[in-house]
Amino acid sequence: MERVPGGVLPSQWIRTAIRDGVITACAPFGARQVQPNSLDLRLGDVGYRVQCSFLPGEEGVERKLARFGWYRFAIPEEGAVLERNQVYLFPLCERLCLPAEVYARGNPKSSTGRLDVFTRLVTEYGRHFDDVPCGYRGALYLEVVPRSFAIRVRPGDSLSQIRFQTGAPQLDRAETLRLLDADAILLGPDLQVLRSRDVTVASGLVLSVSLPRRGGTVGFVARKNTAPIDLRAVGQARIRHYWDRIHGDNKPVILEPDEFYIFASRELVRLPPQYCAEMVAFDASSGELRTHYAGFFDSGFGYAAGRAPEQSAAAVVLEVRSRDVPFLIEDGQPLFRVHLLRCVEPPDILYGADLGSNYQSQRLRLGKQFTQVVEDEEEGPGQPRLDFATSVQEECAE
Image 1 (cartoon, rainbow, N blue to C red):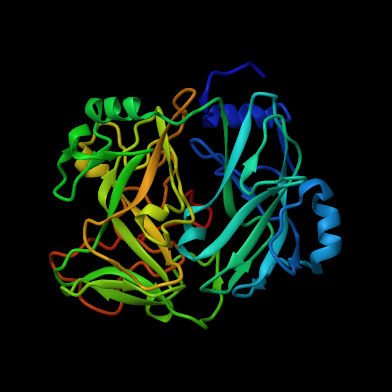
Image 2: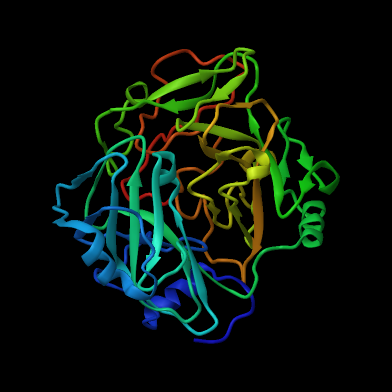
């Protein structure tokens, strides 16, 4: 393959890599597996229940499994249930034979994170989770830990994605400021375009949480000891069986340790074709909490050619877990950072219209497995809009 300049590699590079054997798989690639800047990774037909999370290091996966694997199990077509707070390791269908200048990063998919399923990509002799080094040749594995809900998985299910890149794709502070002034990247709560003077830029864009004080649902907290969620049962799970609502009732929101919450960002994001983005998972300066699991945004997120920015821009959904102590959050509180990344070239497909993506132009939004209607209450006229899918197929892209 031709040498490429620094940046995140686009969909057309991924398809060429599949054609040239740089990316191979034990099953035919799916039509929607290639995303604008990433590739969906699929579970194989076996998994391992392991004693603990581990990095393979110089021992490698096979020897580590011999020491810490409790049992191997087949994943039948009707699915296998993964229990809460248990650690599993799955060989993935895909294998890599990367060029010397190309490396990769793994992330959970959007629906995976919103179900509080913790996943990390593992390589054969990896010393870091989610990092695939330049020129890597070998198999891929996925560590999976369901936290709030047990889940049912099947062979071919995709819980994670991988993006390929060269050089240093992240925009520096000066580049970020110039981009904010040149294009509508961020919108405020009143749908006004935010420019460099309106935004804190410190190793990325510093963004905040939306917790308006008027009535209505401003977030969700996960219930415990619920029935397993079938990853393929799109729109089937009843919201009230799995979530308690958090209302904007002029009271502070106090996050309890080790509870799982869903909130939305106050700012809206809009990524034109030549850019994508990544959230920072944990920032101790913002509080002892983790603000996301699925932190990658493909080109075209919140963007639609020919439409005004306010018609397409999307909120960032925050998957929040507090650590150690109760923690107070308020409307507009800075809570997370987003790194803007340049693409080697614009992808030939974009998130949203090109893929029928589930979370385009989202506001506060649960995962696609939950019902498409608000069941439990009437939503107040001024509350953040709750977006639930109106018509989605099992294989819809995220």
